[in-house]
Length: 74
Image (tube, rainbow, N blue to C red; front, side, top):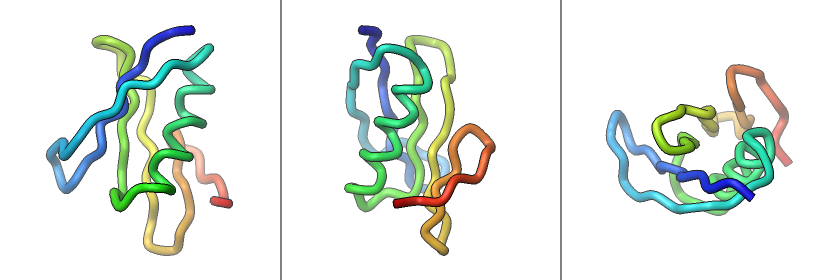
C-alpha cells in the first residue's frame, strides 16, 4: 500500500488534511470521493509526496468531478 495525503480545500486554501493508504492512484482518488461526500468540504486534492494525483470536487448539483472527468455521484 502506498501513502497519500488528502487536502480538504476552502477557497484557495487548505483547511485540513487526512492521510490515507491505497494500492494505487485510482484507488486513492476513489477513497477521496468517499471522504468528500462525508465531509462539509467542496474540494479535496490528493497528493503522494510532491506528486499531484488529482482533485475531487462537489459541484452545486451534487456531481463528483474526478481528474477532469465528470462522474455522477452516489
